[in-house]
Length: 495
Image 1 (cartoon, helix red, strand yellow):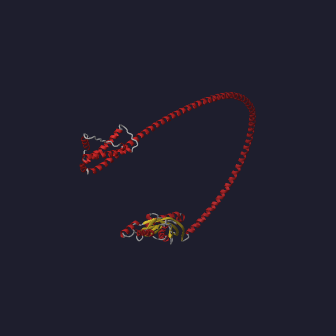
Image 2 (image 1 turned 90 degrees about the horizontal axis):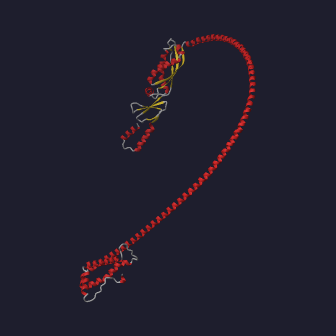
Image 3 (image 1 turned 180 degrees about the vertical axis):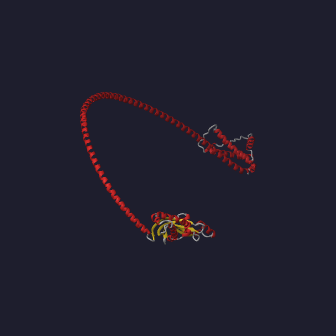
């Protein structure tokens, strides 16, 4: 129901802040919380067709939309009195005073019926409302009973009143718990007279009963005395007979006892002699058995000593054999381990030598590769420098043509030593050269000459001059007139 109210409130006022809604919910819970005690029923009605009933539990009442009504469920006492005399079945006017214990039926149907008649009433008022109905039912029951029945069987009277009134009470949602008749009176004192007659009759009957009882007591006393005397005489006779029989029996028992005692004494002596004989025999047998056991024990001790000595000798021999075996195995194991260690050291030394040789070889290879790379790099640098210079010389080529072939040859011949020195200069910085395979000094010189040839060919190509043709032409023209000494080798001091 609270959720319904919140939904309705949110639909009517959609822009109310959440805080205000929370406060309203708190106010509704605070003002609408109710808790019914066990002896009352709280009826909440208003929004539904049928109200909610709370008995001993809590609930929520929506303010302004629902109302709360209370109904008392506890026990109520109703005094039932016949305000006027009521004639019985035998036409005697009586007044009856009774008390009834009632309550509202503790079920939903009973609460609904009672709510229609006793809602919000105090217990005293509810009891007053029920008093007339109960009095009318009791009057009807009195008219069906006689005065004697009413006085002598009040439980039946009260049960009939309850059964009669229960039909009317069910229609009101009331449950009758009990009905007790407290007092019955009549206008003419008939009940008192009936009581007096009964008193006289009771007294008469009591006197007769007392006389009869006294007589019966006297007779019973005389009979009891006679029976007691007879019983005493009979008891004395029986006692005397029993004592005589006892004396005879005691004498017989004494004779039997003396005979038995004599027989027992004789048997004792015989038994004693037999026991002594048996003891002597047993003693001799025991001595013989002891001697036999001693001999057997000595024999066993000898056997045990022999076995012990044999076991000690055998144990010592086995121990010595086991020790020698262990020593031999230990020596064999040590020699095996020494051989394995020696072989492992040799293998490790060989592997180390092999690794060292490979390292030396690899170092030498790397050193040769380095020298070769340095030579090629420097040769390439020289070649690049020569080409750069050739580019400058190319511009002067035409001017130099006027000097003739002699001048060109002279210039080339002057440059060759410088070229050779520059090609061989990187080798002058190397302390040691190690060559592998087919390499040798002739091949190295051939590489230097090849580098020089490449430089001169590049120079000739850049200037457009065929140096070989010039040299051959010059040599061919001048050999006839004079000796020409041209050497391509650089001076020895410059190598």
